[in-house]
Amino acid sequence: MRIDDPAVIAEARAVFDRYEAALMANRTEELDAIFWADPRTVRFGITEILYGHDAIRAFRAGVKSYAQRVQKRVQITAFGPDVVATHLEYERVGTGLIGRETKIMARIPGEGWRVVSAHVSLLAGVDPGRQERPAGGKP
Image (cartoon, rainbow, N blue to C red; front, side, top):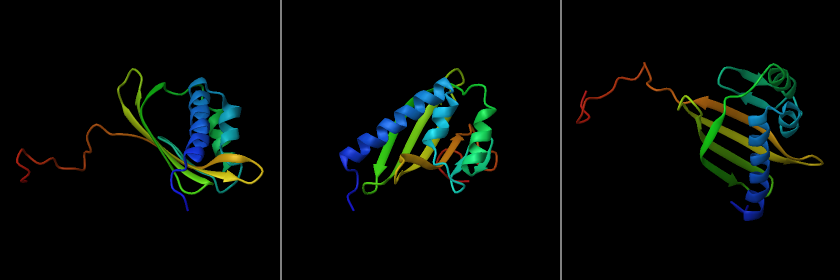
């Protein structure tokens, strides 16, 4: 298996960029088309847990707009010719909140690249369950 074939990375990046543009413009039909139309598709969002393309489509239909964001870092890893993992670190415009998004994409026969799994989260400012250590590292 060839890791990070430049041609595969370029194909995945094109889908990634298409998705980002559609998300920022809230082009729901295009967003839906990028996800695999299958009940096994999963999307964990900031406020939702969605199993299946129908649930993802229903969620998107209710979204009026998405928070605008600026990409801070994109990392794409290709595992052979048909599977990629994309990772995005972004900053929400106006709030400074840092978000993370991971997508697993697969080349589906007869369909091309589709997102089969996605996870979006925001980085919490402070984890209330974590006790901070004083300077020097001792509790």
